[in-house]
Image (cartoon, rainbow, N blue to C red; front, top):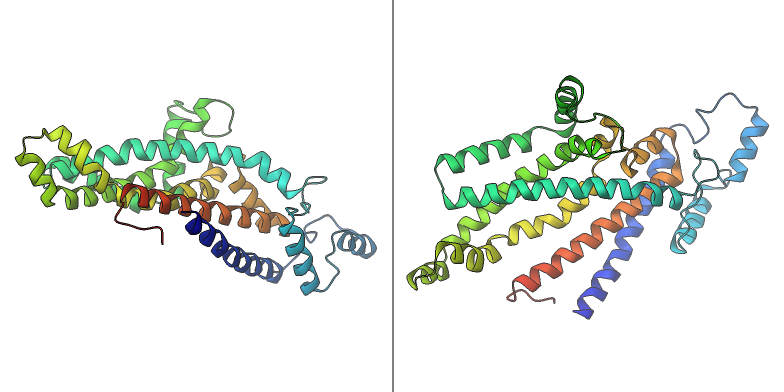
Length: 305
């Protein structure tokens, strides 16, 4: 296992390097610059600003300097937030995105798993058709449609929850549902498919022939194998819940990292965009590694090598 973890850690290095390189040159290729939207300044002031942040140097030199500092944990200063570094901004805003992702994933699991198991236990019945139809709706409706609908209905018209801000539990409900509904739909369909495959296996028939109760067959024999597709999906799904909340955070005015990323892209805040992308990429790589380890632990037929 140590060898497996070491190899995967080494494989992550070129992946992060490619992501950093592509992001660096893409943000610099975009028209405009970090100070192009500032109020009118004299050419001398603009030259001083560019010199202060090293933007007057050749691009290859800026790229080398950024990589060298990033390797040493310095993601640089933000061009738009005075006296703040990218690391400080990520440290302040990521807990908000992580909490939103946590509640969204909790909702997704609470809805998706029971719906998928129920559909697999009663295939081709209304207990199968109804949750799977709702799951299909959840997959088809994008968050930028569902979010405003929930905000208008339950936030503004009915006033059950808050449609904006991040201060109390009432602020968490609508963005978490918006973000979690899509994932719940996928989990329900994957759970149903995985459980149907396992329930038709010989060892399930053997367990029933030996007189095992349906609950024992379900929880002791079927769930372990039936949930493997879900576990495979959970790594990228958790990463998506944390990193893919750009739209939801913008709709509900949540001060998370996704919202910072959107604003940074509009403001050409190069270091903030680069730092956010690298941070998100690291999370995705780490969570995929955790899922791979869990899969091997749950299914001994798989090997770490």
